[in-house]
Amino acid sequence: MAQQEDVFKKLVSHCKEYGFVFPSSEIYDGLGAVYDYGQNGVELKNNIKRYWWDSMTLLNENVVGIDSAIFMHPTIWKASGHVDAFNDPLIDNKDSKKRYRADVLIEEQLAKYDDTIEKEIEKASKRFGEAFDEQKFRETHPRVLEYAAKREALHTRFVRALNDTNLEELQQIIIDEAIVCPVSGTRNWTEVRQFNLMFSTEMGSTADGAMKIYLRPETAQGIFVNFLNVQKSGRMKIPFGIAQIGKAFRNEIVARQFIFRMREFEQMEMQFFVRPGEELKWFDQWKQTRMRWHKALGLGDHKYRFHDHDKLAHYANAATDIEFEMPFGFKEVEGIHSRTDFDLSSHEKYSGKKIRYFDPELNQSYTPYVIETSIGVDRMFLSILAGSYCEEQLADGETRVVLRLPPALAPVKLAVLPLIKKDGLPEKAREIMNSLKFDFQCQYDEKDSIGKRYRRQDAIGTPYCVTVDHDTLTDHRVTIRHRDTMEQERVPVADLNPLIADKVSLKNLLNY
Ligand code: GAP
Image 1: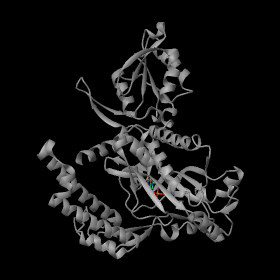
Image 2: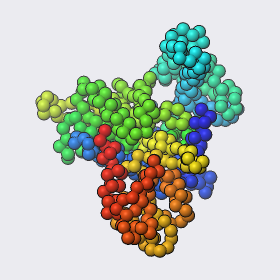
Image 3: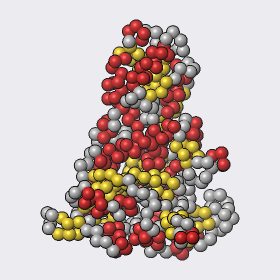
Image 4: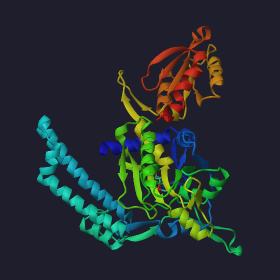
């Protein structure tokens, strides 16, 4: 675990050193849980968004996109339930004055039981070697059984407290489990209180009677309130989906783990409208499709898993998360929810406008049901970086840091490097770069030894480096060096474009 934390620290400083992510307002000592994307970060982020957008709107004839405003009529958030129910249960430690999410403290306690069980198994497996029967050990070993029973009892109690929104019980669990504050080490807790996560501001001047409005905490509502606009103007037939990418804002209490939990972040959401009664079939279909999308990145299938929700949100009748193995454990990157007809019905009620679909095949009108896929761009960014970051020991005793990014997502696709800074090589390199720059994000670099230049490109995940040497001037060939294998081959300059285009195309990912 300590080793993993170490990797995470290195990843955070790598992001800063190589222009991926900077703390926001850094010269003013930063702003909690707000980050800026640098020159390489923005390219990677745009490529992730393009991968998602194309997978939705190109691969599905019946999914179209929109871009709705961040500011929306405040009644939308009343209708969606966010004004009344978008809360986190928080608790303070009186000694450290630190604030925590009560549910997160309990989830961490559950994870501790799991860890303890796994450690017992690991120890026994080492002791017994080949002869070890893990299942039998789990079913019979007294200590494992004791921990498993404690975990199960805690889990049942926790789920009940969450479902009943029983704040006293959440506090009692924290006391009974003897959970301590990680900072002060004490159990001196306040009671548990609800805290609404929405940011608000005012629209119009106070003289006019300004209106309190909210910064959207999810992009989904912009889709729901445009359901009829898109359905009618696009002559869309159910089932169909509306996709959107945009900023969302949440006043997170526990904002940690870098860009994993931010106060300003970006979501990629798709609402898929279906016939009532067919929603669970579509839920399952989107669950599988989304998992394939993640695995197509090639970061390792074992790094993903589903996690079905214990507590369903106020709008859902089924929900699961896709989790990725971050350096700090398996964490949610995407949520897939069967949202029933909750949102459309509620907007119909609050707006007084009929929001129905006439189904010509059934010859009947109804409020469509909705399957939602919702993924955070920033979490996706973090999972891709964590899955690609590699420290390699080389044959010559040196180490290199390489980002093994899927080539289609890499911020820079190729670097053009003249072997030396004279003899017409820079001019030739520029000429080659000028012929490629319309199709690919390229970088020109002539400073330092070729080895150092390779390392710089490895560190930002550039899949190809093209070296121009003296022979290039006469044989019109260059050396192309592959990031992952470090192999080099000599290819005609004229072949570069199709060769690279083939390897960095998004098609390689979209074919899942
Ligand atoms: N419309 C449904 C919805 O917003 P959610 O599970 O609250 O559902 C969806 O959020 C996704 O948005 C999450 O899986 C996560 O990737 C991302 N997300 C949520 N809160 C975030 C935060 N504070 N910082 C970064 N990403 C966040």
